[in-house]
Length: 384
Length: 178
Image (cartoon, each protein chain N blue to C red):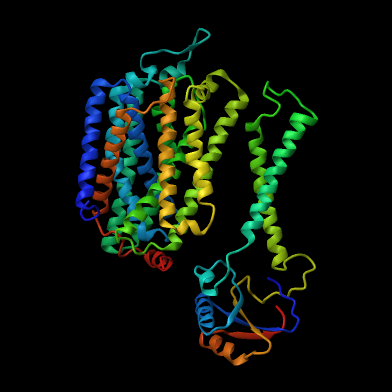
């Protein structure tokens, strides 16, 4: 965080962190909604960090060069995965509050649902969690290490190794993240299932990750860093946010439409709760607006993608939308009406401060712009 | 844009064997006040739009209108057939069941937008059947062609030629029509 933040900004972050700690301690002791809120916020920031990793990996695999001038931004975001892994592991302590399958056995017309009961088992749940988190931490560590090594030695072999690790990461991520969203979020309603659920969350990762990269890049640019990021890159990032917002909506409709059409009670219950008239349906529609309709209309024109303020607003809306999206995945199962309490706000502030601390620390680990990357000239050329 | 000439303009076409020379001479031609008619390359070249000073494409508006037409067609056709002309009860859903219109509405929006954009592109650039437009040699393989336009009255062949020769053009053509 050396230099990237001014002293008063650091003080604000310390205050946010203090509120977060107060929220965790107070919420743990007093609030019945602590664990839901903890899962909500730790999962939210984990998806953003993973978005950075996917962005780096996809560009490595595609032999892309345009992002080299700001590649350290998503790379620094991936350092949060280590911290996020600990917060996700802490979820295990609140499993009785979050997951009713920890103390229930499921049957249908007197037949025991063997697979469901075997799969939703506390020990197996923990093993899956450990494997998933180990994969993410390990592969993103290797990716970042190759990047630093490449920059130190200028050896092209590290670039091709990055490509190998990236390809492996993308395959592993697709599988592990599907299971992660099934285990940590979908199993809150153990009888509900949707096979596209994992893909729906991957769409959320792509959207919020790209929005966060754009937001952080603009903020760093405003502080005088990253001069190599020009209109071409901003235009490309804007196009990605626009495209992923539409992709998210596409998957959203895919899931909603099939469940609506088939009308099977154990599936429709998911949407019945989320569209109930006591306030939830407004939140449901709000998520759709914030994740797709508003950013789609905002980013349609070519020129606006190069206006920094406009892009900051659009990406901010997308990130709020992603937070609301995960909120509505979790809370309607537990509460008949929507509510945002002190715990939710305190944990959001605390996790935000944590994310920014880890991010700025990761950013200052090496040169902000790679010096010896073979793709650097391509990216710099586009920066003008 | 195709221009069937009425002898008010003359064109100078220069052939290059790489994109850098093309971009450099485009920038220089604009610097010296010559109007660029168009550039033809076998693949998209970064920075060419800026160097040629091309105006924002109007194709997006054609695609937008086509997409809107597709959306309205899809919604109109589905609502009319399913809710009015031949109302059928399917799975107990309402006759006018909005979520069910979404897939077809999406597909027809994309289809109409895509087809209208391609159609407009072919008509505007003279790629339609029976077009008399002449094709430039090797422009789909390895040749990069830059075409300048000058008014007939003030036509100055040497001005264009000197820029092209300095930047390594291997062939220069002049003509009244492109």
